[in-house]
Each structure stands twice: as structure tokens, then as C-alpha cells.
Image 1: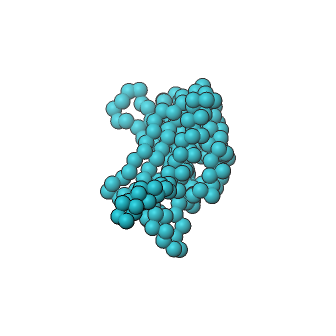
Image 2 (image 1 turned 90 degrees about the horizontal axis):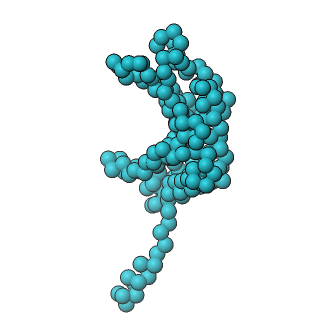
Image 3 (image 1 turned 30 degrees about the horizontal axis):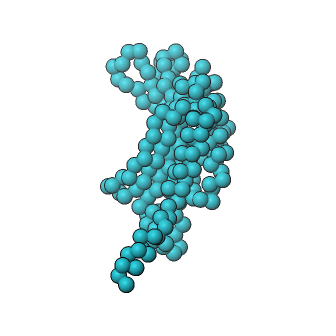
Length: 192
């Protein structure tokens, strides 16, 4: 009797979380654009379990094959609360993931204009982001390395979705990625 129980328990199916399913869908689409279509080049990959808060984080960073000046990143995050709500099937909870899109670009002095007092192309970047992503929250961060000559600054434009996503948005992933690639192309044109 005991042996039959251990056999049946070893046959249980692994049920992937919302995070895992979305991660695989993003990976498949982006790696196809890299390996099969030759449109982008994956430049960095993060797949982490944050042990201090028991959260998951996944990110793929990429650039255009015929560009490379600007990098885009799609980041997916799931908190302990979201993971627990799903795994423990908690009632009145709707598990999902946070989605963030980032664009990183270096700005050199010739693009700065009249010194560092100008907004470093941030107005142009904001206009592009509002055209492509009118409903998302945009935060731009400008950083420069002190003492480095010539002066180079990095601008990060981060877009955050105002709600969690889940498997209901799985069919939207190809369109989302296409939109990120289009934004990347527009930014590349702006910084030429």
C-alpha cells in the first residue's frame, strides 16, 4: 500500500506559475527575433530568485542588429504575495506579474548641446515614449560619471505597466515585443 502511494505521488504534474509561463513566452519570442529573424541581438539575460524577499525576476536585454546604440530590456517580476496566492490557490487573490520596459542610451557631449544644464534629450525621449506608450508611466534617469573625459551620460527611460499581467495577456506578447522593437528603431533614428 505504501509503495503505491509513492508511485502515484511521483506522477504528479508540475504546474508552472503565471511567472514561468510568461517568462517562457517572452523568451521564445525574443530568441526567435535573435536567432531566426536576425532583427535583434540579445545582450544580457537575468533569471533570479531574490531570496531576501522570495521574489522572482526575469529580464532580457537586447539591441537592434543594425543599430546597437540603444538597448531595450523587458523585465518581468513576481512578488512572494503573487507566487503564494497562485500556488496556495488563495481566494479573492488575482496573481500576476509586474512588467517593466527599459531603454538605455549613452549621450555624448555633441548631443548634449550647451553643456549639462540642458535636459540631455529627455524632452525628445519623453515625446517618443508618449507617442508609442501613451498609457504607461514614464520615469527617466540621467547619470554621468564624474571625472571621466570626455563627458558621457547615460539616460534610462523606464515604462511601467499600471496593472499586473497574467496568462490572459499571453496572446498580446508578440505585439508588445513588436512595439518595443518599433520604439527602439525610433530612438535609434533620434540619436543618429
